[in-house]
Length: 195
Image (cartoon, rainbow, N blue to C red; front, side):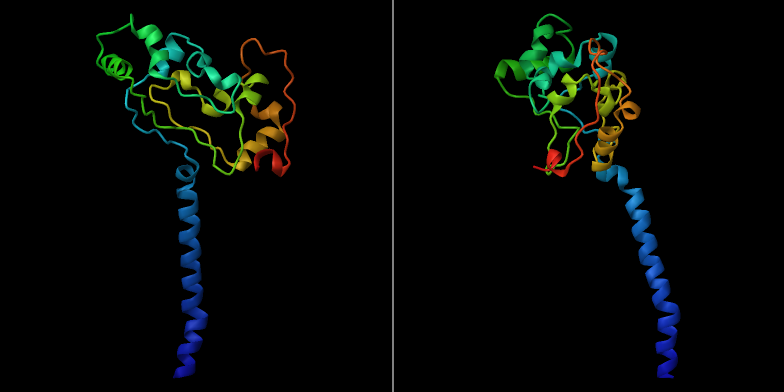
């Protein structure tokens, strides 16, 4: 009887258990892929800000608010004073602009929640990419059509390497005024991004 149970466990239960564990792992891995990569991440912000209105309808260049993107490794988040360049005059009676004005008058920084994040172990320089003519929408999606900004592309190593190896196929949009720049392949050695 003891041999029968051992034989039954080896032939039936263990393979079923291994199959169930592997199936659950595979389903969980693929079902959580977007969440792990941040795709779809759209946190509520302290002030409702419409990129669709500002970048889309009003055609304000990304670099007006994110002014350091051409000279800094990181794209800065604008301070209330940048917003107030227009909103001391424009739509001052709107509830969200009233909130903005309170932040500005009290000198309190707006605690915007970061949407796009490259993993901490990877080095990324915005200025290099922007100055090569790579339009923001290649990585950030069509923000000019987003009422609320969300992450639409993953920032995985695979995505970066795809772009560095095949920029002619992966880079769809070139910045206005930089169409003449030739976009070469990017570095693919480990130390370029892992410093």
